[in-house]
Length: 385
Image (cartoon, rainbow, N blue to C red):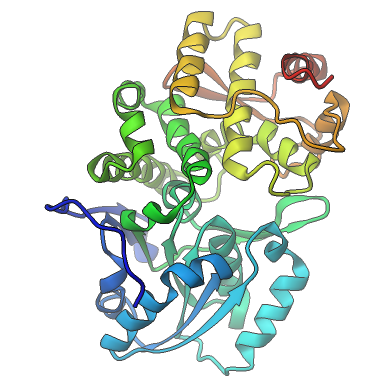
């Protein structure tokens, strides 16, 4: 079994957040060392002791053996499929090949798929679960900070198209989410920062007191303090669970969770979803762009903008467009990507803007020239015009 990072002498108690969706409700368990007890926890929510694990090469090397050992101890049969890391595994080709590989094992409809990995593995596994035999159980075991606080919660599943990110997908809820904070100890600092952007998002869109807490404890979250990480993840998933319970299919308040994403997805599309700009970095930059858009309309004060920017600098979040060999950032190109976004409604771009820290609203009352001005500002600021 893989060696696990040393924990503090006294492990903080786990927290349970319930996503209330009637007969499809489920628990998100947040705590340390959850992977070792995954088998016991799965026994409580599954009828059949046969599961299929989907993971990627990096996570398999670090954590697959631990999960398999836990499943063995609880008497589960299990098969594992390992995909390559990166957005390439969220293609139609990868989805189709994996579906056929799983079908070759002749799974029963009441069996379960387990997503062991970050957001890419979770999105892919969830979409397979939604479509395999017209719907099978699945469980999320997210291994990155970003997936623990965002993509593993709420039932958004999907794969990418050349026309945009997550344009092929379904709303499909898991049976259980195990957010094992201990797994974050194996992440590089860049991945922690990318996940922290999504943590910060929950504070900016609806929880000023959480933003104040992050100003005091954000560095502890970054540095690996177990209690701080548990609190940050629990607070984030509780906020998302509350929103999902109100609006599962994003017809209203759930749209607020897209703060930074209209800009961010355009940035990701421009780099062809490559490793030069990971999702959390795109979201971080996108939130700054959304704040700039808000400030230009007078919706938010420059003091609030500077306060958030100061927190970015204190925690090492990306504030400038990265210099990428062979790429010249152009506002018009980014705008064209935005029109491919699934949030476009009758040709109108949708943005989440801030009226204050902790107070976000959805708007389509934004002119193209305003968007281009914001993009040009960031391009000039980064010296890449």
